[in-house]
Amino acid sequence: MIEDLEKRFREVLPDVDYCSLRYESESGESIAVRRNVLQPVSDHTDAGAMVTVAHGGGLGYAATSDLSTSGLREAVTRAQAWAARTAGRSVADFSALPQSDARGEYESPVARRWTDTSLGDRIDLVRGPCEQLKTDDRIVEWYAGVSFADVESLYLNNHGARIHQRFHFVVPVMSCTANKGAETETRTLGGYGNGRQGGLEILDEIGFPTEAQRLSGEALQLLDAPNCPQGVMDLVLAPDQMILQIHESIGHPLELDRILGDERNYAGTSFVTLDMFGSYRYGSDLLNITFDPTIGSQMASYGFDDEGTVAKKDYIIKEGILLKPLGSATSQGRAGIEGVANARASGWNRPPIDRMANLNLEPGTSTLDELIGQVEKGVYMATNSSWSIDDSRNKFQFGCEYGRLIENGELTTLVRRNKYKGVSAEFWRSLKGVGNQDTFEVMGTPHCGKGEPNQMVRVGHATPACLFAGVDVGGDA
Image (cartoon, rainbow, N blue to C red; front, side, top):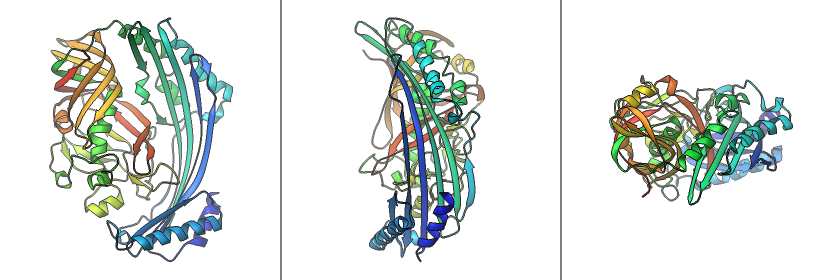
């Protein structure tokens, strides 16, 4: 297929300033067991190509699942027509933007391939943990599941680029809900944030076979726990909550196309403006945020983005100062500012736009005990349960499944209905402790939505536990 596509693309290549073909094929399987009952096993396959043309300053694209020579030629014709229509009417002169001539390969590292086991064995890998969740009659809902996807992509253009990449994704989920009278509490395994690239080894790495009884035990304990107290106090966040905090209050506001106004009608704008880059204090000196598609096991690792830009690690925020936006080559050309390799599409029938990939908070030097030991009065919170943030990605309120009071440097009372709120940059400026490598966890989600029409992409976040000073926290009355 790959060799045939290259030959067909050369046959239909038009005489234009720029023309690219981005082919993508995805196949996958989802296995779920709910209340010890196997749900219908689902699988999917999907393949097609996007042709993009820039000519005379205009830009056009067309997608097709007909990968024959005639199908690709028809897509090229449609893309050329759109490029002609948009010439002189676009937000930028697309013909003047630099284009990739990169060539290379990339593949996710895999220790135990999904397809090396039988379907029956894969079902048992999910069934066992699900059955372990039912430890008490008060557990009224319990669920375990694993989804897998194989993605192959090929990028070609008329500037000589040829990029072939293969990705292997595994996303495990686990949840249990306990009830007593009017009280209901749920615990999940990492808040559905344990997606990674790799194979079946991921299940062991995150404790999927062994964590069920801990989750059910904590759900039962939360039924009798008091609500989180209200007030301004210190806050320690576990990595499975930090990933949501990074995602919403750093990742989305730093997307360059959003800053330029592209998302205004759909997903809002950003409090960040172009003149902030290079000088704005986004957080305390302890805040170091990197865009890093090079961590092999992380959800959004890749060798090249979907415009053919070579991916590398870049500091987005260093020692609290905002340095770069999450802006791809196209947005960089529009804004006149340096960005990163983050042009990404959710599939063959969507154009690449500015997206998060692996957006990580670099580890510090403190152990978890040392973070907690600094707190005279505060709360430790883990595992996201709810989130709300305004249209400019500034004011937020987040909730967590699990909480423990911190009193005089010690974890004490279990608390529930844990919430905290703040303003993005003010919150990050209150960062006063960053966990070390021992607290650092690699996590990710397959469900980040953005764009019109909507695109759901896989995003990775890796982070240690962190300590914040003077945060407005509180539970329900």
